[in-house]
Image (cartoon, rainbow, N blue to C red; front, side, top):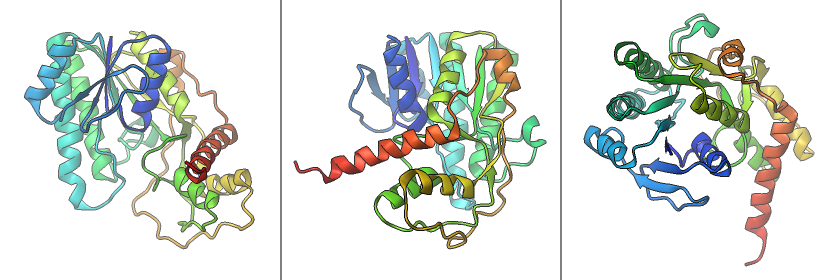
Amino acid sequence: MVLVTGAAGFIGSHLVTRLRALGVQVHAVSRRPQRARHGEIWHMAHLSDAGATMRLFQSVRPSVLFHLAAEVTGSRGDDVVRATLESNVIGTVNVLAAARECGVKTVLTGSIEEPRPGNGHAPSSSAYAMSKWAATGYAQLYHRLWDLPVTVLRPSMVYGPAQPDTTKLVPYVTLCLLRGQRPRLTRGTKLADWIYVDDVVDAFVLAGESDKAVGHALDIGTGLKTPASEIVERLYRITGASTVPEFGTAPDRPHDITQVGDITPAADQLGWHPVTELDEGLRRTVDWYASQECHKESPA
């Protein structure tokens, strides 16, 4: 039996679907009411509440926890500092404490934007990245001091079908092109490591099954750097858009640095490798959004 926090989110929802397909009994957690789609059992809880978190764990008694709940934002504003602190740090500490109390193996979601060997320990450039770095530090503390079996997976730039935040580059550009609109684009110079969501889910499943990665923090990406402009150009080709992208019509986000995963440790500890080529992943993503747009246009 497993517990998945953040199960209504992008990676979390794909993970729930995969686990149920594998025949795993899944208890899913969200801050808002949800409807079961694959036979999972839903719980509503705010993980920043220590008492509610402990009661949840004592009620479910999972053998494995996948902790994906987080306040996700790329904002550079100070208005998100408290929200990321409460959700990503305090919420994670509450989850770690409950997992330790109940003896639960834990797979924690970090971020490729944390200071880490792969980026030369570059300082965090957002409140989100700082909060995830702190959460990873607490996870490692719980492992060192109290032997909590915890693995941290740090996904890079994840894309794929059903991404709830349609302001992200891939869904935003895809939907604009499918609707005949011209997306507002930055210069597209940022280099990132783009990873298809199913490959990320593969890593989570392996981390939940294996003890080899316990105590480790592993990058989950492709190890390849691709500029945002190339992602846009590929989406234009895949959708068959007749226009050309107009880069520089939106401001660049400040303090962005190149983030690429060092995936050798994940291969060594989990036997994990990404398998989805970029064009194939983007094509699957476009096909999914196109099917959703067609469904909206179909008469009732």
